[in-house]
Image (cartoon, rainbow, N blue to C red; front, top):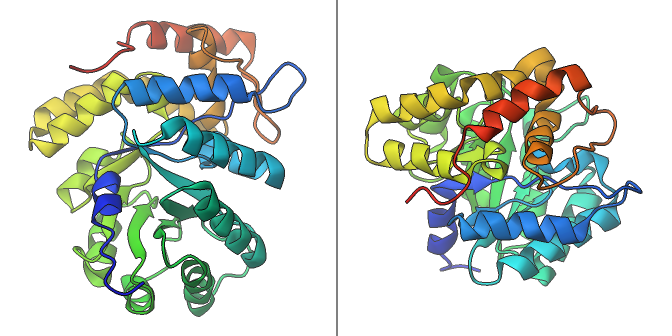
Length: 307
């Protein structure tokens, strides 16, 4: 695929990269009708990049068949209104099979989840991602980086082998480390996405990020888009005003090692009547005593377009 620039895909990453939740029905199965309704809500709000099978979508709690259905539904619902960045991962054969399925379904990009093997070498990390990227040279590939010890030189090495590796979702909670890794890897070679969402977006944008992921966007798309607009215009005070509005909600998601990250988002959606609050183990449904604060926060946010 020499000569392919992936300009459209790179532009799509430089914005709000939405991570949709995966709603469950009463019987515990994936509720595809509600999933599609939630996707339409995001699309109607102007979101241009959707990531089925992201962590907010409970990637690790879904079966392979469910992950395929979620990808297919997202592609079909998005049509030409948004680009699909499908999450893939697990063992290498499974990641490659999922990436090829995403390509066949019509996705334009895949996001490779951080390998969860207990023994990850830097060289092995490169080999893993190179194998996935080489299997789908037509697709843009985004690295999901959560390892603070991986040097930027290894990303540069991978980039030298794989021109279709176009983005990095950087999810290490260290803005100084991010600035260094981005420059060592190639600030302009990759699209750098703040992978810890709105709370980290202002700091990471100041160091070179041009996009950020969001689970909050499921609840209040206009709020996420308002932060993006402020960051793009260089209006840091405005971005921090949005940051203040979402601070408590994101603190609840991040508490206890992010144990309730997805549960808080689904609780807010349930309070708005948009989907059930159910999550799968090892996540938990929030106790009744913790639900009121989240409902109050969600009720105070706009739910339509930001402009």
